[in-house]
Image (cartoon, rainbow, N blue to C red; front, side, top):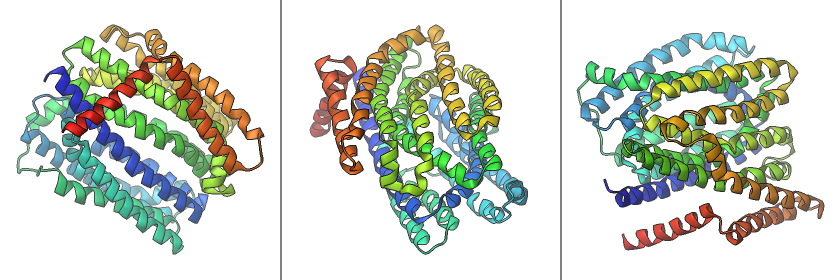
Length: 485
């Protein structure tokens, strides 16, 4: 495939991926605000406690093999069907374990009523097994337009179900129903939009080939999921479900933004990098563009969000959620580093070096566990700050292998994004003092947002920042391409 064809495919895929993320996540964001106003933090805390186990269980169902299908060049119908059936077998096995362990989990938290919630919510494992191959096909062929419609439709229907039940005072069950409906609707929509159906074929030799690559990613994802959710498990056990809800809610705002922007770019980058995996210079070029573009967009958004965190929470969630503000600000700093993390890891995956990926995960998690062990007895804020420290250290670790693989050092990566960081710092200083202008938080937050955009983009334009000019040109080309299509 020629470079121009790849670029057009990437731009088209990126457009629909951003549309999918922005549309679905935007709706989810609005719905979550409405639900947060209707429900109490304790309801969210209970779901957060349960979600820890389901997220970890989903790693076995959806991770590893799906990525292997995307990365492998010569996949065929036997590969897709074999993974489809294997995912269902794994989902069934894990569901039985969760079903039997549900009373023990409820007892662990001193909330026996959670047992039934776990058993019902774990049904989503089968939904994940059903659409895991469909997701792999969409990502491999960059048909992100189909993801847009499935995400948008499922978010609207499930959100409506959740809001109605929350309004009717169903409490935690409103959130359970919302998640079940969301996953079920994704299956229904993808069934009609993705023209793939499983065949009655299953090949153990083909599974072994995929497993030789995928098992390392599976273990890496498992380690990452356990580690990322360990904090929630500890907070939920040592403190209260409400405290866990504040912690998770603070994480949610920046996470949605990063998922929309950086997640969209990286989802398109993996198949694009995989296509060019035999051309190291092209891989480096695509990876560098990913880091520079993501950082230019995410740095000011994370910085601005941290500044307006308190009035934003008061306006959107009311004062009952004000305790989540410090967690939100810490999370903004953590998520700002994600462009470096994900671009480096995607490049390593695309090159087929899942062995390096696994080693990195083990090293990072050992360091993270050490930091967690130090901070765990110093309060929940110390735990959150410990995560930020670990993200900084991890950015060094993730970048290290690409010095040898792509001749792209950590120093060179930071050199590429330092201009965006400096502009962000200046923007933060300017908009921070706006809070002292008046007492009306609505007017202040509007001024801060407008001023932040003007200052950041204005400086980027005056300095003719390379990443800014690239984005402008890319948008123009994308518009021309779509008009001529």
